[in-house]
Amino acid sequence: MATPVESNSSNKDPRGFSGLDESQLEKSILRRGLATAAEIEACKTQRKQMVAKQKEEPKSLLEIMVEAKVLTRSQMVRLLQEAGETTRKFQIPGYQVIGKIGKGSMGVVYKARQVSVDRVVAIKILLDSLAQNKEFIKRFEREAKIAARLAHNNVVNAIDAGEVDGHYFFVMEYVEGVTIKEYLDQHKVFEEKEALRIVLAVAEALKHAYERGLIHRDIKPENVILTRGGGVKLADLGLARITDDEKWGLSEAGMAIGTPYYISPEQVRGQTNIDIRADIYSLGATLYHMVTGRVPYGGESPTEVMRKHVNPNVMIVPPDHLNTKLSGGLGMVVETMMAKNREQRYHTPDDLILDLKCLLRDEGPMIAGQKTESLLALAEGEADELGRAGPSAEQMVEIAAYVKSRHHIIATMAMLLAVSVITNLILFIAR
Image (cartoon, rainbow, N blue to C red; front, top):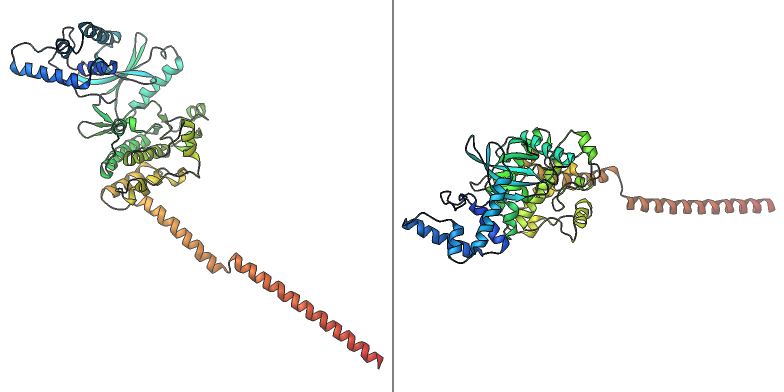
């Protein structure tokens, strides 16, 4: 969902493509290796200078690149033809397709303009290869319906859905920004307070979903968008599920649904009774990656990684051990979020939100802190109970040995006494 910064929409090329498409053309040029980023920027600078002089009608970026011999004219024509085919391929009443944003496993996402209210939106269209399969159509429509249940500032909101000429589409809010994944791919690590602010926003989104009986099931850096205005948006409800839909759950029994680096243990096991704690685990794994620059569990294959999520003997290295700038409180919160036994995690987003707000105020976590204190108190209490209850096992062994030795002494004395009595009796009779 992350998209580049829009260019000046007043610049048009000879085929009628506005500057709104220019960013997509730039991406195509870079992807194909037709020019470097530096060459594109140089041509952009040249165009700005031409506009400033106001001597002639501003040319399109592609025309300037051809004049600068960065591109050939045939390359320009081919790029424009491809862009034209994209805009002609999907004509949805009420929307003007601007350009392609990206492609996923189920669909292609386009940037478009909703004519009635003159706003930019994103349209996800089910892949043609999948649109022939009733099961995929059902899944696609289900995603749209689930998205329609949510209306929150920290969620990419649904707008419309339908089908035109065999093309199934789903219209959603257009969000311009970068994903956490894109940030991490640049080998950047988030500062603690910034990471907490972002994760708090996602936790608020999870609370909204939780209150409506939904779980996301694929919380990961790629699905969290940081908007240009500093906002946070949770995206991609393709794997979301209604919590109490038992039929749906049973149909997926035994299937590991999620992304290996961030998946919860119960999802790895293919359990059917997944709840919001699975999302809390995945958000904890995301937070771990954000503040350490590495995933909680690595491995040479997805299977190896997922086994580590499940194995109780394999524990994460505390994040504050990897990044010593982090507070111990954040480490406690992450470890509580990522407890392998979900009974030991935060039970609801509200619990997590409480602790995140504590950390943002430079206070210790209340709930994660209580759990730690309870474990220590339990250990001390057990020791006290043992003390009050009597001797330890070692002491009992010593006592048993002592008693046993006393029994041997008493038995020996009894035998000696008996011999003495018999000897005296014989001597008395002999007299």
